[in-house]
Image 1: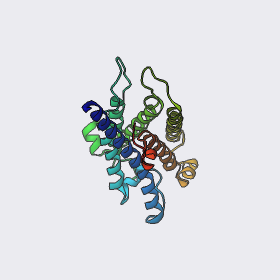
Image 2: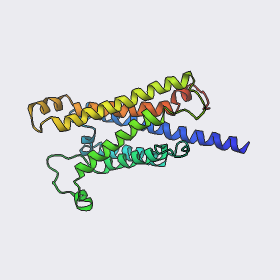
Image 3: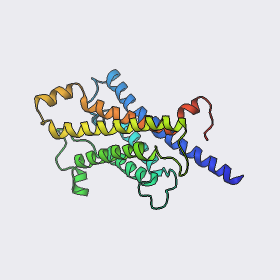
Image 4: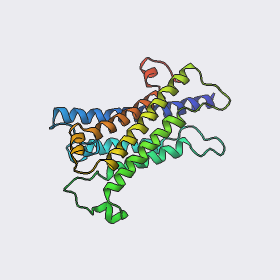
Length: 235
């Protein structure tokens, strides 16, 4: 009886963290878009550029909260000799989220050698982009590898197969947006006419937003949020 109760409490704890991650991920771009449209001159060139607006504290706070939830997430116990585990990937993703939050994206009037450069030997921009890349890559691993797993010796039922299609769609979306962002920063010449045109339509912001929403959807599905809204108890 106690074992069943502890197991149910553990499931509820997992679901709470998953739902929190999904809701935080969904809230971040929506809040930034609302601020840009209603209270500012428009949407910034990137999600990270909101760091330098009055939404900076919201940006940092939500990313740090996501990082803390990810770092505390244990997930399912790993199988023997299993290397890609919920715990390891979530910790890596959590560090990536916090690094992205606390080391800002570069802007023109920021000195080339900032405090991050003095402490780590690397400029804040390098740490920022590395943290964001690690975070998105880890989220893709969650969607494509960890969320789609089935307990050993069992076959996925219709609901699990449906969820897996959503997870894979979210994972592929995250990787596609990450690839597009890398292509933008590597292939589009800084200060070129093409860059100005792409910045005018906020391309980087929308690519990042799509990836973040895909991350949020995956965690909301994993957290059985829709089932909770309809009053269905977790398994």
